[in-house]
Amino acid sequence: MGTLWLLMFLTPASCLLDTTQAGDIAGPEPPIRNLRMDAARSYLTWDVSAPSSTIYCVTDSDHIQEAQDGTYCRYETLSLCTVTNYTVTVDQPPFATWILFPEPDENPGTAPANLDCWVHDVDFMSCQWAVGRTAPGDVQYRLYWKDAREYRECGHYQTDSRGRHVGCRFSGISKYPRSFVVMVNGTSALSAISCSDCFADLYEIERLSPPNITAKCNKTSSLMEWRMFSHFNKNFKYQLQVNKSSGGSFNETIPTNHFLLPNPGNYEVKIRVKDNRNFYNSWSPWGAPQSFQCDPDEERPSRILQTSLLAAAGTLAIALLGLFLCKRFSLMQRLFPPVPRVKATVCDHVPNGEMLALEAAGDDCPVAQVQDLEEP
Image (cartoon, rainbow, N blue to C red):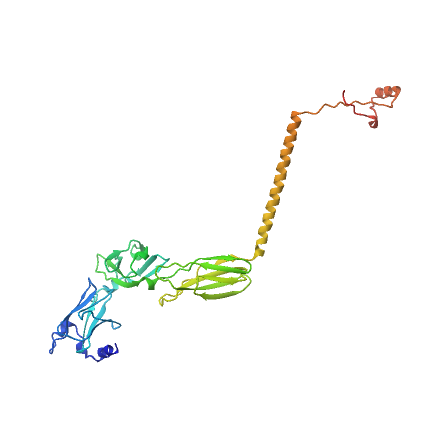
């Protein structure tokens, strides 16, 4: 590979010509002619005029692959909007030629700007873009994604205040191929509209969501657990931020989906996640704080409340029982009335003369001398 790069720098500038120009140069016929891009098959292909050594395809001077059968290079993804330099080099005899694909656009400012896509919430992908700086007022954009078979248009657009499409949302992303091209083109009655596209690798563009924590705890320990979901990333590490009510606070980074916290008391915890092998994936945002109460002393008010409720229930039961007995006793009295009692006053020790005098005066017998007699 080092030899290839050396040849690239040492090759005379006259060799770095389009094949359409190379035929006009006096001298031996170039080993490669008629360099062209077959966009339908994503093939960079050419005609070979003479046997040659190893042939390489170089894309924008940073991606190199060896030609297949010495006659073509195949690309998994091919941009139809971004102008790219495709160069073909030959070791022996030293030779290179190139083309631009697609051809430079006359209205690049009409293309959607800042196209960006990301996977989120496990099974969704969203894309956003801005209206091109020189796009006419009636422009309308549409987004398509393309895999090896076909283009498919987005079905859920977001619009700006003027009704122009500036975003799109896909669901069921797990059913999509892992990598594809996203392209946004546009239409206008006033001018031609350029397109924008980007390569989407779902593994690289996923923005992970922090998991939800559950905990089983008592006075001595708290076992926290969680489950992480992703269709594309599998190797995770987590960071916990723990704040105890007693005043202790710390961060802990772990590779597992559980953590044992000793002497927890009452505490609050937040979590975030990162794929351990994905260079492109940064830490997720912190999840919402979750609170756990693990101190038995905190249960004392609950026990007092339970005792009070039981006492009140007992008092109510006794009152209801008393009311029932009273009603029952009243019913018995109505069914079986008591024997009538007759009161008679007798003055046992009052002589007849005095009795007559008392009656004449209208006086009653002394209280101490009154007796109750039952009627025979």
